[in-house]
Image 1 (cartoon, rainbow, N blue to C red):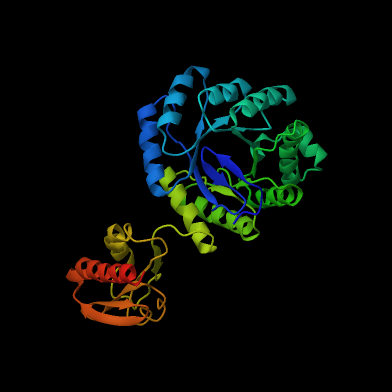
Image 2: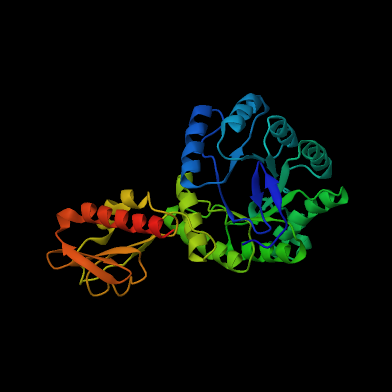
Length: 355
């Protein structure tokens, strides 16, 4: 769990023992409100708990207000260059706004935004990006980009603290893992405010997943991070799935079924990936933390996946079904879904009875 103070953002608790929240960002522009709602509903179904939206025009205030009202997830307006957009987003009912220290325009605009935030009870996120660092910030940090990133957040945080405002979420991101880790370690060691973590512009699905997993894994394992986003050039629901898988891998949160599957080798008797996809519709209905295994052969089936609540492994002439390492029988390939479905029903009924 994150180790910092607590916030309430649109009814969502953040920090101080709350679950580490999984965030995404709308990839649909506000100019398409129907598309926004379709995406928000899909994100909500995938487990997303907080969503940012780019807010780029004051003319869109009525649209933003409607989306905020209908959204099943708290919405945070993402603000760049024009502080009046932050004021407008708060008027539209956003429970939070994110401002970027690198392009808001100095203390004056920030103070104006802060005044409105105080009136509405919203949460203010200070989100510095490596790409927004200016020459002066880099010079003051002696060229240390991680330090400069942390200091960019601190510059605006001091303005808030001078006003006694502490309803703040800190964020310092770069596309470079080392810079991001250093900046967040510095901020975490100096302040007790909730922190949003992520590797920004992490890349396409495969590369971005790896980069995000490395960076977030380091930070989360050190207790740094109260909300997270996996920033991928991929649909938002994929970002959410990867985010939960990172948390699951660190023992921090469980959502949905946990898959165990072998990488395959020349001993395999089944095409593992194809079988995973065949069973995925069944797995979507399983309780959080249920472990489902798909193994290529009887050699590494029940033994390597002995902890699985239910597993299948390739066997001569068909497949072996096993539970907690104990074989339940073998059947022909054609009966895969039927046998797995029945076994899952038996297990879940037994769990309910035992409870």
